Picture (tube, rainbow, N blue to C red):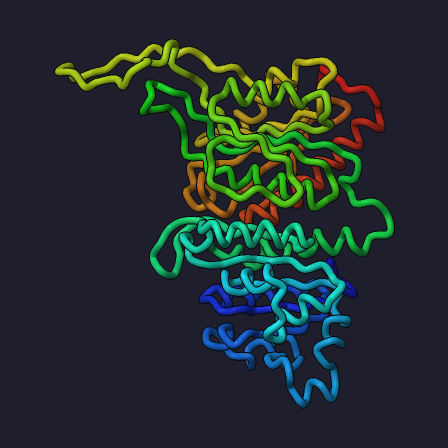
Amino acid sequence: MNSLAQARILLGVSGGIAAYKTALLARLLIKAGAEVRVVMTAGAQAFIQPLTFQALTGHAVHTELLDAEAEAGMGHIELARWANLVLLAPASANLLARLAQGQADDLLTTLCLATAAPVYLAPAMNQQMWAHPATQANCQRLQEFGYQLIPPEAGEQACGDVGLGRLPEPEALLAALEAAWSQRSSAVAPLGAGLRFLITAGPTQEALDPVRYLSNHSSGKMGFALASAARALGAQVTLVAGPVHLPTPAGVERINVLSANEMLAACQAHQAQSDLFIACAAVADYRMATPAEQKIKKTASETLTLELIKNPDILATLAASSPRPFCIGFAAETQQVLEYAQQKLIRKNLDAIVANDVSDPSIGFGSDQNRVTLLWQDQQHQLQQQDWPATQKATLAHQLIARLITLYQEQRSISPSKISTP
C-alpha cells in the first residue's frame, strides 16, 4: 500500500520518553511509500540514538542548526524546502512554547519557521503539563498560526500518572498523515467535501440529586476519532459531546451537553443542516422521574428505591423525522452482538449500524482500540456486513467514515430525497 507515495515527510523528534514510538512510526511511513528525513533535538537524543532513525530511514539524521557537513549539502533552508509534510512527534511542552513564541534557536524550530509545508503537532507530556493553561494557550496560538494539532490520548503514563498526554500510537499517527496527504495530493475534492456530519460521543449524566448521577463508562474516544476522521476527509462536522475530558478535534464544532434530553435538543437543532448522523454516544436509557432537590441521605433501611423513567431515544427520533439525515447507530453489546445489532438496525429504521463487543476490556469502553462490524441493508433489503479487526480507533474511524460516505452516496444516487423507510 503506497498511501503516502511521493510524500516527503520531515519527522521532528523532541525530548520525551514517547520518542521510542516515533522510531516505529518512521518505519510505517516508509512502508506506506513516504520518503522520510529525521530531525532530532538535543533532548530527543537523550532518549533515543540518531543511529536508530538512520538505520530505519536510510538517511543521516539532522541534529545541529549550524552543521558544516549539512550546510555543504542539504542546508537547513533546503531541508525546509524539501519537505511537503512536517510532523513533530513527540512535541514536548518546551517545543510547543518555543514555537508559539516564534523562536528559531535550534534546527527544528528554524525549519518550522522556514517551511511552507503544513506542520502537524503531536504533543506528548505529563498529564499535568498538558492541562496547564500555558500549554493550552500555546496550542491555541499555534493553531491560529496554521499548525495542525493531533491531540494526545489518555491513559497510563511513564511517570505513573493517568490522564491526557500520551502520544497516539504510531498507527494512529500514520492514519492522520495519510488523511492529510490524501487531501493535499488529490486533484479532486476530498471524499467528504460538501458533506455535513452530526456526531454524538461520550456518556450522558442523569441527575439523581445535586451530588449523584447515573452514567456509564464511555470515554468518548470512538466518537471523537470519527469526528476527527470526517473533518480530515473534508466534511463539516458538528460534535455533540457528553461529559468527557478530550480535546476538540481541529476544525470541528463542539457542543457540550450533560443529559440525554440536552443531547436530543442539540441534535434536533442541527439535524436539518446535516447529511449524515452518527449516534456514537452511550446515552443513558433511564433517568430519575423526579431528581431530588437536595442530597439523598443514607437511612437505616438496607435498600433504596428510585423511580426511573425512560429517556428519549435520540437515534430513533432523528431516524423517524422527515426530512432526515442518513442515520448510523452504534450497538455496544456484551452478548449476541450481531443479532442485537441487526434487530436495532431494523427496529429503529437505520441506514447502517456499527456493532462492537464491549465485554472485551481490550476493545471495550476506554480502550484505544476497537473491533467492529458494519451492518446495512442493500437495495433488495438483504443484510450486508463488513468486519474490521482490532485496530487503533483513529485508524478504524478513518476507514469507517470513508465506507459510510460511500454507502451514503450510493443511496443518494438511487434516490436524491432523504428516505424515512427501509
